[in-house]
Image (cartoon, rainbow, N blue to C red; front, top):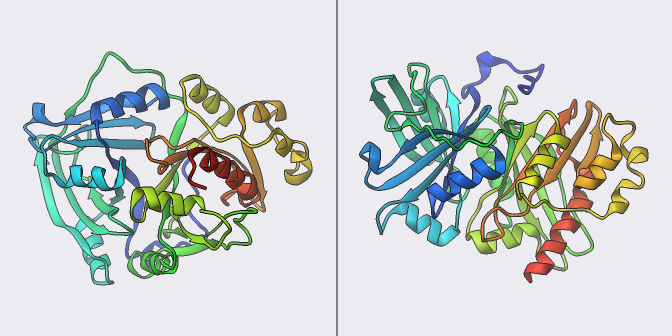
Length: 374
């Protein structure tokens, strides 16, 4: 289920070839409990560990995996750390979007010379399983991109991590890979970060939505979707737009305190089975009114799925020129109303569910009203 490479992609002209998402690191208050949550609720499996047992004194990290998705859950072990400050200011959330590249040093120099702010100078980590080269740059807010070169490494995850084996391993729920990751930025910064991905990282803008596309009676936002050359990495960038009440992006920024990752979209092969299992494990999803399904076939045409299943689960459907997609969004998975997950199944569609925006954002507004933040 790899995403297709665009027909116009010219690998020879791509100064920053990216093979995929290597991992996503979240700074969390309690990494051990977070790992248990992602295993129990989302079906991730134990992969690797770093902390006191491996000689690391400042932070503890658990790595969980499901197919091509790797999450690193990190917590501080001492007071006064940057991780602790980050959690205090922003709550639990994504710090690192690590990108799998063939050449971490070249990736660093190509982006820095185009204006990226350095986060990590190129470095080599080594253990008995080989070497990994790493480097990194800043993006919106305090979020960073690490470039990971692992072609000379055969270990479980990275040097400094040991294999994490547990007797408790709930079955996976069918999540396959990271489809896209959405960033929220303050008013007036969307185009700045669109230009960053375009000029610094060689991405192209593949879609744009304004406040006419993404609005309700009360709130609005604007969004532009950036994609790397081979189409494996997609980063929609959102900013708030004028509305009568506080939009979901403004709510996010109020609680996160800066730009950051709003949601992680993960792909699956059978969304009905996956969402059924996630709900059984306690994951709460946004729900649209059942009237959404009254004219679904007239809006999107014939689909393979049983409408009654989609209605029961609250799964949304949209169609573009290439096919259709099915999607559903969890409620925030942290105490602050910030980060959440999207579950998506693509049946040819390459878009992002524009036809569902109004129903989706009205559902978010109902949750905001309950939280008293609308």
